[in-house]
Amino acid sequence: MLNDYFYLGKITKLFGLKGELMVYVDSDEPEKYHHLELVFFEIEEEPIPFFIESMKIKSANQLIVKFEDIDLASASKYINTSLFLPINMLPLLDDNKFYFHEVKGFTIIDSNYGTLGICKDILEYPHQAIFQIKHIKGEILVPVVDQYIRKVDKKNKTIEIETPIGLIDIYINQP
Image (cartoon, rainbow, N blue to C red; front, side, top):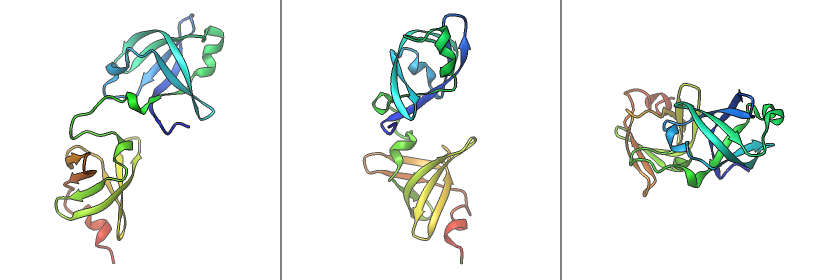
């Protein structure tokens, strides 16, 4: 299973005639992954390790990668394959930054409304991630944006937010 892994990116296309593959790295800091020795391909929903023979930087988020045991004849079958790394390889983040998987179960506290509830999940949409908060009156959805997040306390498992006026009222002040 991929529970102990994080999504790194995807193989997007063939490159050249040596079996090299173009890899898109889904990261705000892709340079932290330019020296990997192996990645895990998702094959039939399982992580399978593939060792890297060589890697070249194409652009900030694109790499040209030659994997061991993948030649030109077999390379095309890996196009659109998702790539993963073990969670313990995630780079450490600054105090107020977090990975989505690590804040599930955190208590969300709003500066105007107090404790809203527990972060049940973070829903990822193409243009916005959303805190899904379990509140006594039901579900509260709050965009995960830097300007709303005041403090992340990983030790005490709390996130303090300040939402725009009216956003929380939509969820808790309904008849």
